[in-house]
Every structure is written in structure tokens, then in C-alpha cells.
Image 1 (cartoon, rainbow, N blue to C red):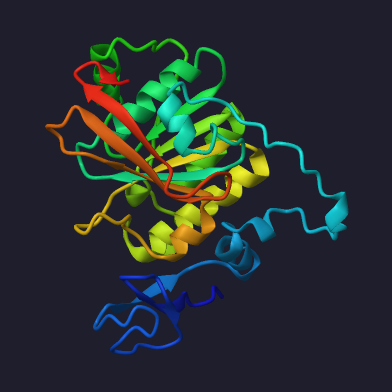
Image 2: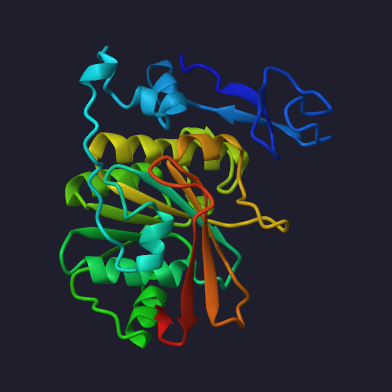
Length: 278
């Protein structure tokens, strides 16, 4: 007989977990934000999914002497944008999980589409779109005059299916646009919910670290300008970047809020017009 789905109570504001419902979240002190969710995960995979986003569970559990750990510079590759590279700490680190957020119309998708189109001429890339159709993305690339011959595209929102295809395609860089529309079958809640965002981001981070593929996740921001989603999301990713700027402005500001491979609060300016980002 199949076991009943596990029940948990999660704060919609910060993502804190509780064994039972309570009126106020003890972590962020918000009232009436704790809701019940069901997780239909089997015991064999439950632990892996809960811990999948953290470096300590990346499948390399081996005791090492501190003096034996290599201090060689991390390998990186350029995005093709000097300002973007600088905010990331000098480029993209293979196997890293990056979250880039911004208001609607800030240019997140355009910047990443340009980046992948350029890089696809020299490496294998995969752009996964869950919000726009493939035709819409192709129209934007055509309008911007981007090289389109080598960029692999996928329209999908199932994380399990995306990772299965990525295992077959073996990209070096993959974009997920956006994390708020992705979902996992074992998480019994709607896409965009605290539980789905947390588990899908953790699953993707685990995939990045075990496969050596750099993954960039697109995220939305809240009204106060912070990245939407549970606070635990900030802990499992390696780098968090905000793209800020009015839709009428010619310039956008990139700012790193977290970076395990570079300086925090590093900023960069990118010109944005009808020709795209530059």
C-alpha cells in the first residue's frame, strides 16, 4: 500500500518549515503566512531531494586534509559581456548555480538569450523556456540579429524531464526561464509556490554540481525589489544577481547580492536598446 503524502507547514514569506500550523512565523515574524503542503516523495528519494541543493551533498563525501585541497584558480568562461563577467567574479564557473532576477521588462531574458546565442558558436548550450513559446524566443533572436544556428532550445516546465534531456544533450551552460513556472511531480503544490520553488532550485543546483554544467535560473522580484521565493533559495545557489532598471531607461544595472566565487555587491552597467544588451 502506498504511503500517505507527507504533510508540512511552510511560511510563504521565508520558506521556514514547521511540524504543525501556527499563526506567526518564528523566523520572519509574519502573521498568517503559514500554509499546509503535501510532499508525495518516497523514502528512498526524499532525503536526496531535500538536501540536493547543498555543496555538502554533492556526491563527494570524502575526508581530506585542509592542506591537500587544491588552491588553483577556478576555471571560468566568459559570458561575452565584460560587465556581466565582472559581476560574476570574472566569468561563469562550471557547475555553478546562478540566480538572476529583475522586474518584468528589465531585460533578463534578452541578456541571457544573447549570451547563449554567442556562446553556442563555441560550446554546447541549452535554453529552457517555460513562460514563452519557442516561436516568441525565435522572433526576439531574429529581431536582434543573433546567431541562431547552434543554440539548442527546449520548451518544458518539468524539472525531471529537463534534467533527463540535459543528461542526453550534455550542455556546458543551461538557462532556466523561469524558476517560478517549473515544477516537480513529487511536490504536491502549484508552480511558483514556496515548496515548488525551493525543491526545483535545489534539484537544479544538485544537477549542476554533479554534472559540471553551469545553470542560470531566471527569477522574478517582489514589489520591494527583492528576489521572490523562500529564503532557503539564497542558501542553495552559488550566485544571486539582480538586473535593475526602468523599461524606458537605456541602461540596466547588474548587482551581485551573493557570490561564492567573487565579491558581493559588485555592480555593472549594461546598455539596453532595440539592438539588445551591449
